[in-house]
Image (cartoon, rainbow, N blue to C red; front, top):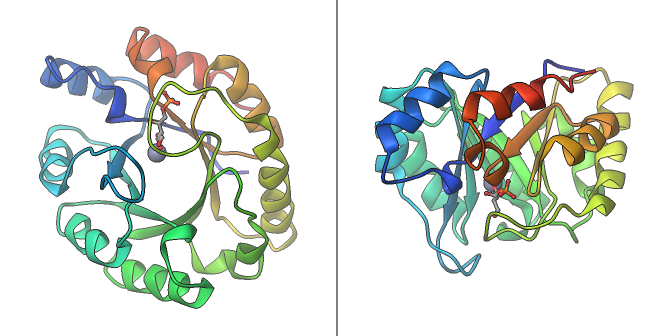
Length: 221
Ligand code: DX5
Ligand code: ZN
């Protein structure tokens, strides 16, 4: 398995103290920063556009991990590619079919950006299995996308085990990221099931950022 990475979700950032929080994040053990991009259509919530990604990318030395919860990932991915995204993950539920998903991965990767595909809790990951070599990451949602602070759905770990078995059997280095309801307890179960990348919003920002990231990093196997 790859090195454990923590990706704090800026959905839970304290926007009254942005520069202090970015400094704390940059000085923590978190190597990635997770952007939950919501368009008010794919999910019933609205967040931020590419300028935030561009600005934050100049303020911290972290991997810009962009999670698109949008109806038109072809359009929005181009905006974030121009805004210094390092990884763009879109939803399988937002594209026409697997062929369209693979074409979008190819388009993103052709511009030197990593590509990921996300599945909601009730979407099977089976369709991804033959094509795991064509993406850099699979994002398994452990809550319904849209809002931070929800409880972890442990039934999605079955999907994680399936993906991990396939990745190991084929000797791939595709990452498995989990998103939603991660804390020091649920993270343990997620890592045991095969996740190597943990998104955490409320858990990180409700505590001291560095201490919370360290507590998650300690769980590595
Ligand atoms: C939900 C988002 C998550 C969310 C995680 O749509 O994709 O990234 O911010 O937040 P917590 O860790 O609070 O569940
Ligand atoms: Zn997310």
